Length: 302
Image (cartoon, one colour):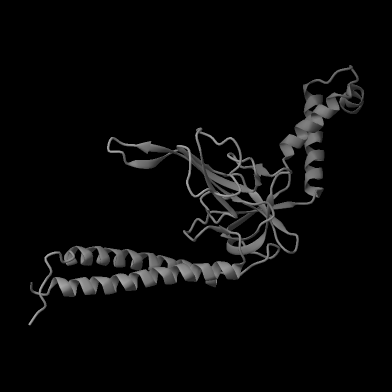
């Protein structure tokens, strides 16, 4: 004998359909996170001094690449990276409200990463998944805030404009995973040659004494060609004798690996990735159980 269905029984087929869809989505996200977790865990922590070019995991302090730190657009607070969003509260004819984003942007300027040995490289944050050190949301009555966010967020907001700002603070200890690319700069010989010729022109006496071979008080075409050739030889010799500067930049990987900037240690980043993978697995497991429960009740006779 089967239990009688209530007149207001839950829509079991719909519940099963929604739970099944959620289970598939959670499984997909779990597999993505699992692959990402393996990449994060299997990439060894490297020192900038000995890091090979390619995909790396490095840690250090985030510092401005320029003498002065960047200023956050909404609050003017110093930082090395920022992202913001300005949204307006809109109401439709039925009285329903929603937030419409009218302006958003993120910093693209590189910042410096300095490791424990004092070595440094640049980090280009374009397309990176940045975990901020500061995340503020506040409200106002103007399209742009009049100042920084309040120290305490009120329980009830006033104003039809919402401001969201995320910052990576100056001096934050960060873990960066991305593609390390390096190139060496030996100077611009052409620019150095032009600068040397301009310097020689400012001292016409010395220029004529050196290159005016026919002593007519001016440089003809052949003599000027000789001056240019001498300037090029001297500039090239100076450039080759100068120390070679190696510039390293960590940027978005070209092979699809995750590009992560997080204010935490490498071990903490690995734990975070495992936690997210575990959460997706748990959501998928619960969704499968709910789907099976709903299917069982949906197939019971009324």
